[in-house]
Amino acid sequence: MLDTIFGIHSEALQLKARRMEVLSTNIANADTPGFKAKDVDFRAVLGWKLETAGLLTTHSSHRKGPGHSDNGEVFSVPYNTAVDGNTVEIGLEQAKFGRASVEYQATLDFLQGRVSSYKRALKGE
Picture 1 (cartoon, one colour):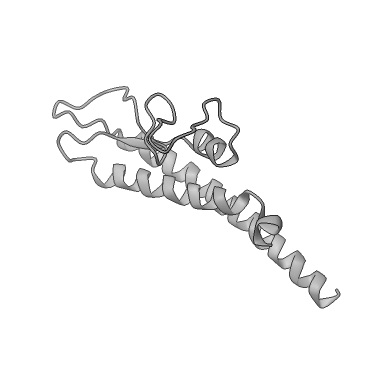
Picture 2 (cartoon, one colour):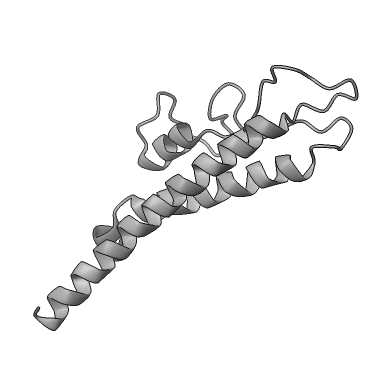
């Protein structure tokens, strides 16, 4: 029943939370030599969950697509790589994290609104 109430938004919220974890790991490792920045390809992973992506897999060992891991993480392509091999660009990562947190909050607000409307309907308001 919850799937019909929340639709894809519960999956999207979990995926957005995962992306924020990955971005925060990038920020935390900005000074780690050789660290490679990652991101989560939200559109591709959500497409896999909806089974609307361009490449569908028929076996668990099939790859999802070029450059993707099973959890949708992809390596970020840096504009300027550090001398020590670190690909984290702190300003860019902070901007991505800020945008991701706003998108997460928007999805959360949408779900809270939906729950409130169902509560009002059940109370007969």
